[in-house]
Image 1: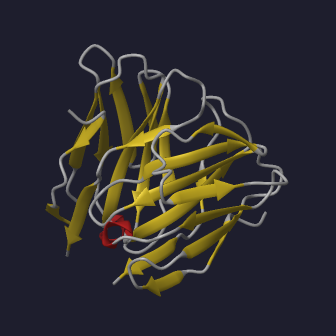
Image 2: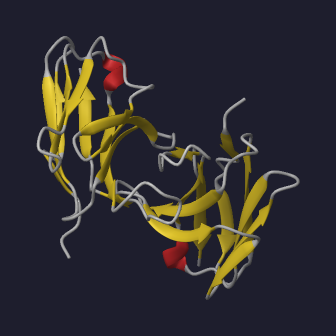
Length: 111
Length: 115
């Protein structure tokens, strides 16, 4: 079993829709989690950090469920510009700062 | 503030050849990471440096890959000899420290094609 798993999608949604991605992790000792956005042929860029139960930034909400070992990303009022791959990452308890990434979920927002 | 710099941006080589990638982290960032991202997958850590010391190289294929960060600033990653399965994007990232609250900033990557 992979340490961090995501549904690769693609998720095809119309503009204005609400879409949610889940990400499961296997290491119960993981302390912090991250959602990165990666555009085609570009580097990952940090979208949100999740250290406790959740985080919200405008149209984006991340939630952490430690009991079930998953984090979610909710995007409200999807824009065409939200089309990208969303990478989930977990940081372990070793304090090395090492991130374990999932394979990413592809979102395509259609007009 | 300048971001993480990497070069070259693209490289095409034949199998069994050697190749080297260069990374210059954000100024003042003590921790440097090299990741390998194969098409359709998430980045996988190859090696992590804290200043000029190796913190984690558990997933580095040491029979063919090597990396160094001699002066604790820029770093090079070498593959010798390359295999077809090494075709990937090699991403360099840096953080100020190692703890939980340090954001990792990624460079633009080097896209390697092995023929």
